[in-house]
Length: 289
Image (cartoon, rainbow, N blue to C red; front, side, top):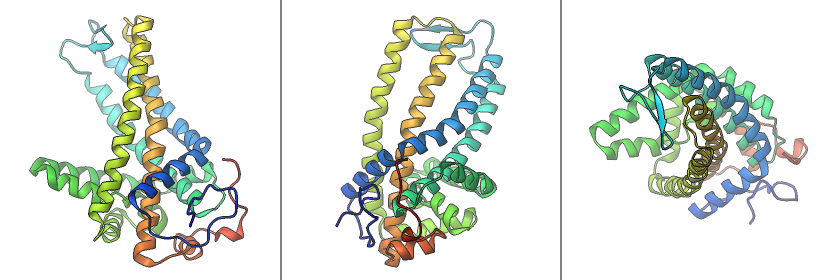
């Protein structure tokens, strides 16, 4: 049975558990079918942040900083405090808005509803407080897990991987989202780990190719000034984010739905109701995104 949300016909009414390969295949097709909307979300969030970050880095660079062989060098080997603070603060806000908006957009597309990237962004902004708390808790506890030993860090990354869609759709707080993700992945840790690992390997190959392309661009342009280096670096970050965030978001969205189908036996109608979304037959099927 075809469980793809991007087929030409009406949405499939029944959902079934998916294998790791089917999760990746569904995520890739979901990404392809919603790419335009996903890229709009990423660009609206990332471009202003990238510009501000690079301006902050440029303002904090010592006067004797220089670029050699595509790398930026400073006397202390690091960027000044202002640049680091701006990158961390804006980066956290951007990532959480981005992940929240992508979750709304991707899950809506998967269950067969028309997607609205503007509404997805508004929903993420409305939930910004819980999203930030989630990021802080997730980040702190994951770092502690990796410091204590690598295995606990890997364990919590997998256990809490669907916390963002749980927070966005189930109207729960940060702690509740982590608990909900733990509940959904219980008994499915290895399968979830396998899907994430396969997605990371695939994404790493693609991003490595992008890195080679931008390295060649820097070499071809003979980038020697810090200003030009910052511009090329910002462009590279934007392109990378355009590829990475929607793909990871699609994998997480499919896994979240798959786990709920496995745990709760939901079909599309019940799932839509459980997520607080209109049932697919009540709205037009997804158009060209």
